[in-house]
Length: 490
Ligand SMILES: Nc1ncnc2c1ncn2[C@@H]1O[C@H](COP(=O)(O)OP(=O)(O)OP(=O)(O)O)[C@@H](O)[C@H]1O
Ligand SMILES: Cc1ncc(COP(=O)(O)O)c(N)n1
Image 1 (cartoon, helix red, strand yellow):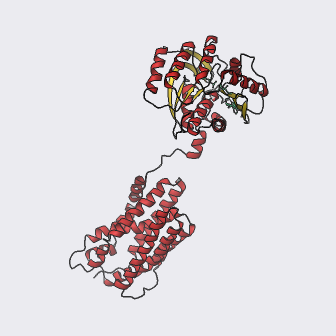
Image 2 (cartoon, rainbow, N blue to C red; image 1 turned 45 degrees about the vertical axis):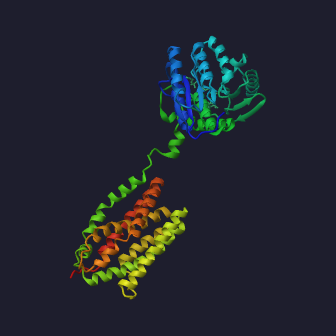
Image 3 (cartoon, rainbow, N blue to C red; image 1 turned 90 degrees about the vertical axis):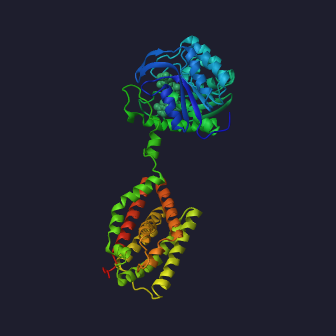
């Protein structure tokens, strides 16, 4: 066996089931469900449904060989699962290909009789199947199939199955996954038998009609997990647990009125959902577009227009600066909390530098713009914005907090870019407008957008929604903050 690979490339060599429950169709689903990349070479086209097999068409074996070589000439194969091989010639063709391609893992599900009771192999072929065993790592016979290899009567108890599997394993030098599904009883035991070494796996029998393709699915899953982990025992245990979960959900699919298929992805669907993960770029575009109304309303404010065209009164400007200083003081505290909560060193450092930046700006406001005069109390609007941020910080989810602090970077930087362009010579607020051009703040804004949109893209739906709501609320607080200064132009 070669070194385990992350996404094993697994080839199914099997017949078809147009209703998708058995054969290559079941194999491809099982391989995918176990994290593998599934490939399929068709040995026979089978007209069948959940009630049984109607007819079998076997294409010329020369074409089978062409399919097999087309795969192995191009793709590195990590495991092979062999299912229905309709006839001696087909077996000999596959056997010759195994000798040429030498795949590292070969699992053979000796499909002889379908769940429906239909024979899928003739007696001559049963003999030829034995000739394949030296090229196989694991066979997965059910009770009647094990009996064919043992050339004995079918076992009637689990003890007999184990004894028969040991004899078959020793006689052919092959690992046997003996399956007890065909025995009566509350439990469905399986066992990995390698000569005299026996490892048993127990499971409770599920009452259901959805057992079509269980053998195909189990063997494909084992081949895939072995290629991924290198362990036959782990592969068998994991595949059996997954199959039980898939059998339990088979009837939900409502496919056919006979023995229905298992639901190969039921567990993954339930645990992983069906949504495609958003990219950070999509979050950035979506969020920005979704606050276009707030951004337009900010541009339209008398305060912003007056600041831009220089008609804003000194009184309104001074009031704004005092509120800004008061805001920054607690904003720095909120950023420090974001730093404390951040799970990575990079984010921790980033928010800490943001906190430092807010304090530096606040000190400059005090000394350079407010002449060292301590500003009056925060307004109701300033208090509301800070309360939103402080409450988000108190709730303790760093992702939601990061989203809540983002508008103070993003909206401010965006507005600043436009205002800076208006700082003409002689503009009464020229010096202030130029502060918007601080390159350190611009790059911090870019970084904040990257950090938050990545967190949102990776978050579960509920957390992303909470992040969006916190972001939107802060954008609205930004609007209120710019709207709050007393009206007044000179
Ligand atoms: N009703 C069931 N409840 C739980 N597990 C089951 C049930 N039926 C089959 N299994 C499991 O499915 C796997 C295949 O079982 P089985 O012995 O039926 O093999 P098979 O006959 O090759 O399969 P198939 O019936 O598809 O031909 C085994 O691991 C078995 O334990
Ligand atoms: C092409 C093909 N291969 C295998 C089976 C066995 O299916 P089951 O798992 O129901 O015995 C089948 N019915 N058809």
